[in-house]
Image 1 (cartoon, one colour):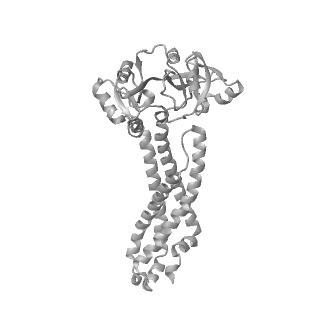
Image 2: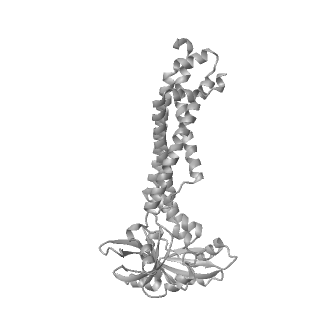
Length: 386
């Protein structure tokens, strides 16, 4: 009969303050795990936003380039050499740098902004901007602004709606007109961006070498295998460039942020610390519970219940604590994701996979703590207790 009674739940409910304290501790650990893991996921997802938005099959860059925001220059003619291969349909030279953006309504405020320049007659950004945008960029001193940039750049979208779709501001102390918007978003190294023509780019950065570019986009003819063409181009060009597939280009960026910089390590370490904190809290609660109920456990053993039954009781308590701590933690983390996403424009949102993963970690954490607390039960001897 006793096997049908959730004894572990009754023991927790009998000492409500202890159960509440344990639940709060686990909730804190769950929120910490959620936030750290999601920041880590947002780090990688945001780092490759431009990689995924550009239209290309292969990317050409300098061997010295570790990530997109600080790309090293290489000779533009290398990209045109690649265009000579039959498998290559078209190439797009891309210029990258950061400029000083002047706040459109508060001229005393300025901020660095990511600038992309390319020949608007090339198709390298067909996924990101329209054909009309391509034509608009051919006009001098016109740019397209990322509407998902941080608010510190000013209410650009709202101002454009008020001013018939155009907004004038200063970029690198030159007057430019924002004629349209696109949407990519921010990252941990990027607060905002604009796209313009290669000629406008050189107007912004007059000291740039015209024959040097930062990135080359290679579009292959239909039916071509990117890996095969990559190997062919790489084998016939000098070593001052390297050619990557879309997947390799994105992986290069993620490797930089995950391994080269301390940010990825910090987020992973934070999640581990959340697990450790939660495990310690659950262990202390369950150990104290086992200590307080030694006589009851001894009585059950004297009545014929074996050690496995007592193990089941403690693990039942672990399961209950995991559920009680996870549910409010899930709700709090979801709210924090929404607040953070609105404030930073980072891609943070609760997903089913993330919820299931963190619940599995929480359950593992609680069961592990319960197994540690069970060591006290191994010493229970009814004859010694009574």
